[in-house]
Length: 247
Image (cartoon, rainbow, N blue to C red; front, side, top):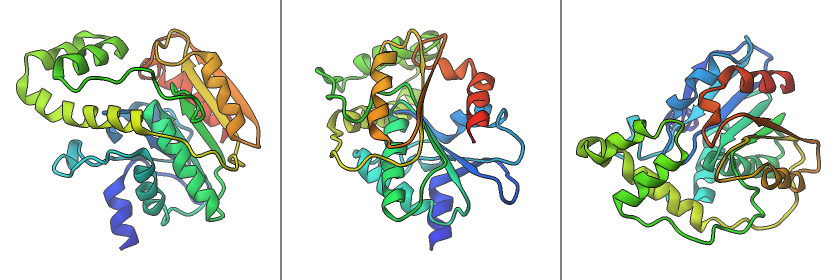
């Protein structure tokens, strides 16, 4: 049963070698596991790379999406039980919060991560956004365009009804999950945290990302890259260099 849950929730991006750590990647809101293939290609030989596949997208499109980040973390923590050896997590945007909550659950059960990499996301202790994203399609698409490296890649959703029907439900679900998320203050993580962000990210500033420091009793470091919210799509080799040097 544990292996079945593991196979449901994870997608292998790269095989590893015995005795080497495993990197688990958490997609952003509306994202899927395949978005991490480019990053996985630059991870050092021997390090296995898996990405989480949330329900409600790609090959899990027939499943209802989960509208709670903490519930997502519950499922992922259970799914990762079969993975032996040392683990490191990388999460971007919403994925950073899910990775953090999953790390908390693993540490509660005595398993400490090698590193937690959090990208493009405010710290869990930050207050929720003042405004909510409306649920109509036009507003969702406009917000996606605002964050995209190339807004034209999103604009197609305005004219392709079938594509919009496949993409927008998970995006809408994830925005609401982010808005409802409330961090319950407790013991900080023991594993080191590495923060990464784009210098021109309209969602999170470097100062806000710095506040992740309070969520670990270990070391913290911050890396700032040129680019906007999805800076990582254009710089997989540079981000992989940071990951490789840490794990």
